[in-house]
Amino acid sequence: GELETEWKKHPVLHFDMSTAKHMSESQLLSELNIKLLDYERIYGKVAAETEINQRFAGLVQRAVAQTGEKAVVIIDEYDA
Image 1: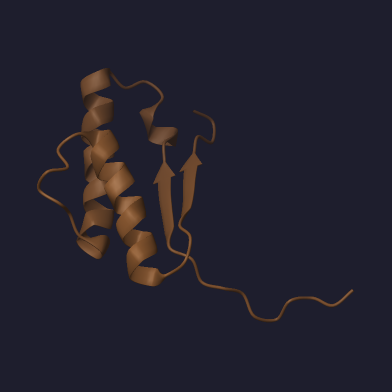
Image 2: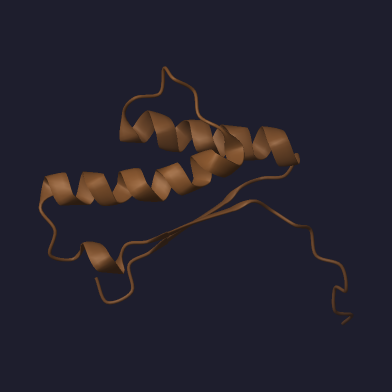
């Protein structure tokens, strides 16, 4: 068979959770907040999105809207 030579670019949201193994709930939320802030700088933030799950969903929606491509979400739990 033929190999593809052109790949579509997709927005990728990568969350490395290997650092979260021994964190308390508040530490985990703080870590997630920092990771979300990085992507919110790229794709924007809506003030009404105050909870982690709302912010995450909003990021995915905005990434899709801004790029016209499906978003890829990678949650890396390597050795977590």
